[in-house]
Image (cartoon, rainbow, N blue to C red; front, side, top):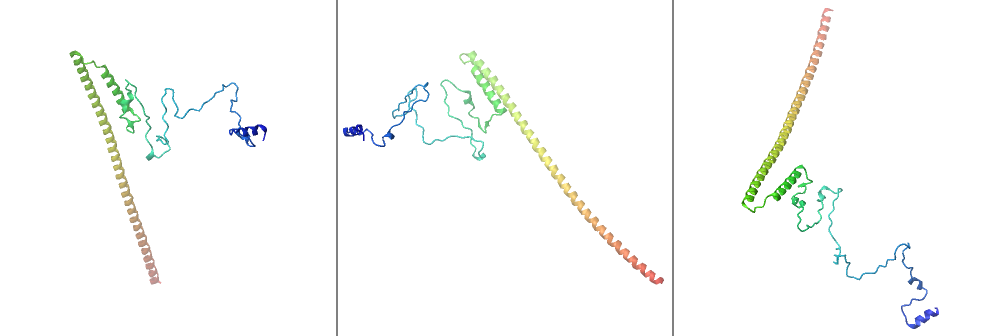
Length: 238
């Protein structure tokens, strides 16, 4: 030991490290490699949570949480609906999208031409209600009632038009179903006639083949008898 180490040990200062392992208690300072960067000193914060600029404490993240996912590589039975994040409404504001909460995935979404027409009619109706005169006096009340009555007639006309279009679509589907049924019935009848024709042709061929075999048998028998008769006649002449 050196004289300084012995003096430190004799003074009773236990925080001084000495001996052969003294080098392990020293490390090179962590400085910036580039001299152009300013020297930033970071102090450890006291326990109590981080603070955001507005002064409110941040909520600690829970250990477990549920996350909605959407993937095209999953089975159709396990496929989830599209994720809808949480939202908040600013004061004195009514977003138009909140009027479409009745449209959900698989029931109006993705939107087709019919849903777009419904959205457009809803916009026109909301604009019409905003343009109505306030019922402050008798004249304004009468004009308001007259305009509302005209709007109601227009809505009934649109509704009747929609009903007629739906009926026409149903009639078109019914015609297609009847045409499909008739074509299947005709195809079934044609198959039945074809099977009957093939069966009759097979019966005819079998009958003709039997007649041909019987004819051949009779001709052979007649030929044999003729030869027998010729042989007997030749013996009588001799």
